[in-house]
Length: 239
Image (cartoon, rainbow, N blue to C red):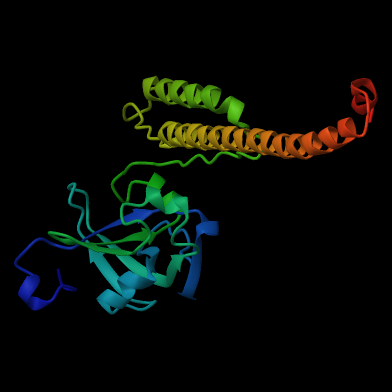
């Protein structure tokens, strides 16, 4: 609460949380990344947006209370970071979406970037672990959309049935719904192309009939002239 404005200290406390992030998804703005510490202060890096809001810099120390009943921990901020690409799908795993700050009924800051050893140890309470799977669709064809949708559904169902030390995992995927939209779009596109092809065929047929009629009209006048000059039908037909 000491970082809250005085007028807000009687309300809900601000919240934060630790996370071990993919190093390739973050960019260090200033300071350094945290190192593993067996004792003493925990080291963590703070999102740049959160540091700006709280007025903190590398070297600052925070004392955090565990709302789950664990012991208080002192955290030393070693650096500030930001997402390498804020719109990357990776940040969907983050409760704050990589923004660093979210204010609703209370304000949440984070995540505090810590080493994997911190989260696996007993100095902070255990939290959820998330994985994100990305597929390579370079070889996917429209004929395999149905098979892919079924495979994704079966895989998600199988994962939900697996058990872990702390319960069954939660599996979310938007791929089947996305594939449904793609199939509907393909159906509309194919229908539009078919209608356009039929229209072009009809126009071509009408054009041929018109040309044939014009040629027939010109031919009729020439035929009458040749007949008047004594030409036989067989000879005129051979011209």
